[in-house]
Amino acid sequence: MRLHAAASTGDHMNHVRESIFICNSEDFHRWLERRPGYVWGTVDAKQAANIVRGLCGVKSRSELKDNEQAQQKFEALIKEFRSEMARREMA
Image (cartoon, rainbow, N blue to C red; front, side, top):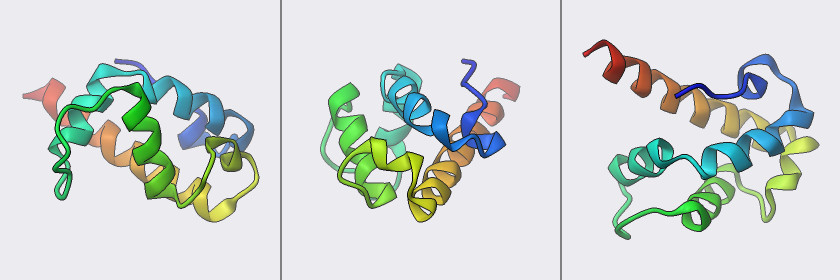
């Protein structure tokens, strides 16, 4: 799976698009389901968006454009996801 580069390049205008893209990814859904503390069953795009908003501390993913703290949390989340996906590809 190839993700857009917004979260790793600091292009904050694209964080919103990146979050929409990733929240529609089945790989991301399965990854969220495996995260420690997640106990609500199967993740779909709507739940993924809710989880991302909660983890980033925003009410709307559009806040990723201007909220530096949320941007940092989103970037860390994407980095964690990409790292696990890379490990799985190497296994």
